Length: 245
Image 1 (tube, one colour):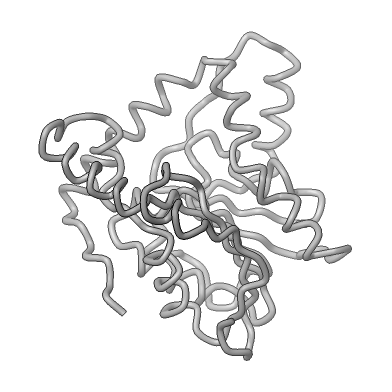
Image 2 (cartoon, helix red, strand yellow):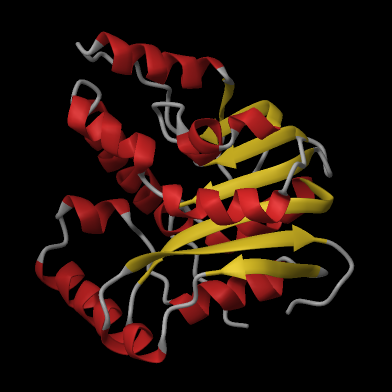
């Protein structure tokens, strides 16, 4: 397994500053807030189907975002008694005029215990959580492998891990690297210190979530992995004693 090279603290700080400015600029944008509430919802159906009637005592969202919304609180909080949301950025107020939308957003935010910390060093004891989500995070991070290792540490045996990352094709990664050389200050490139192919992300999970098994994944076809557009790829993993499958 070839690890992803961590970026420097200075490079990570630059990415985080770009992220915070972006989130702050959209905190009054109702259309963007609506988008945040439905983004990544495609994994909610498979998650509910696989979990059945199971109710989780404690859940963690790594990279919940400075609005304090995330995937689990929006789409799965009826199945989780307590949700902690972890993010290195400070929590932002969401100031929107639509009262119904604002009330809905605040209802979600009230159900999230916001924790300001990095995913590389989650400030809780081992085997604390029954379910953890980390979606659209590791390509923004300083040390992606360390985040997954920390999630493995804090997840209880038999717990569920929902992982998602934007996976680029071979052609897409080449275009991304070219873009970094031509437009190094572009927001999208600054805010994403890392890129992942589907295979690279899968190898990271295989090497880090040892003793676990995949319950579901939306693996792209060979053509898409070679030359298709980037897409959010998901894995639902159960931590346990069985080999990776």
